[in-house]
Image 1 (tube, rainbow, N blue to C red):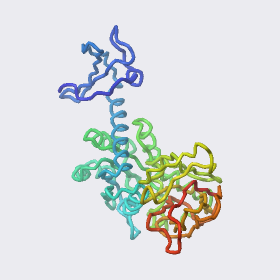
Image 2 (tube, one colour; image 1 turned 90 degrees about the vertical axis):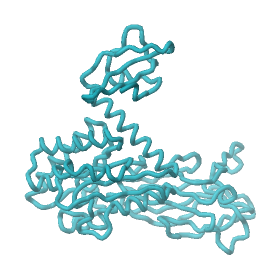
Image 3 (cartoon, rainbow, N blue to C red; image 1 turned 135 degrees about the horizontal axis):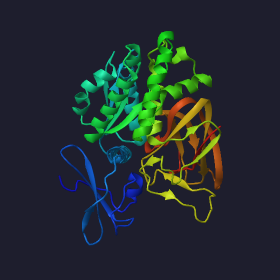
Image 4 (cartoon, rainbow, N blue to C red; image 1 turned 60 degrees about the vertical axis):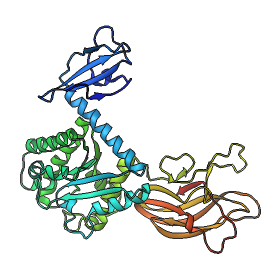
Length: 403
């Protein structure tokens, strides 16, 4: 089939634990071919272009799949965060479908992901089915591929436990779904089932949740551990079980919004804030903006680096995750004669008009803007949020503080 994959000048032989041919050293180019039986062979080449097959390792197939999935997910996240088209398919049971709720988590996932990345090209498809087990999921996997997604979030387990699907079968079904999707170019993310409170089912589900964790660990897949997250919320009394799961099995709108929030936070690797924190905006990779003047105050005239709105851009978005019951937010700015008053938004809603004007340069101005609860939020300032009473033009964005 030819040299299908090239991984560049990296020490891949150490990752894969294969033996390099005599005379080949770290930094040589590594290639892979796949035969009609889906078995991989590895070759190495150096600057003279010669090829020689490396010693085959029985773990090679699994390790290639691990690297492939990580590469696929990295490419998908790059699309998500650079305004490109990206489709996420959520495949699972009635929790994914949105039973017992008016708004499935997939709807919230798409809406919030678009907002925090300023990318309306993100599409989330709901492929959830009431009463489905992993048996149904494996048989119906073509439904996912009909949508040609870049990412698939996979969640089965509650119905497997309820219908006594054996753990071996469950493990095999989920593993096969992961391998099929990965082999067809889809990055796989595993999600554990939420905790349930039916006495005859709650204990049984734990074993299926552990299976998902084991598969994620073995295949090095991204894991959104909703079971652990919800149990942690209950333990810390941020929420009570019936407030999120009123029928003891299916999350309601609030519970599903927490699932969406945690899915995004996991995919974006957002810090979950439990203590007082200070988020400087300058060169922060979580900031999404078209502001071209990311001002570096090398002379330390203002004692802060900041973004300069709106002379050099039209929008500024900063996502953050509050991992406690409530948090008071403050915005740090600096004030000057050329500055205006701007409306500051949290989660798309105007929460405070912040006056940026001062007759003299005023540094490190910290203004309380809102109180928010648990979950994913985003601070936003738009060019058209300049208030009509303003005489100045600009607005300086330095940092967000949580208590």
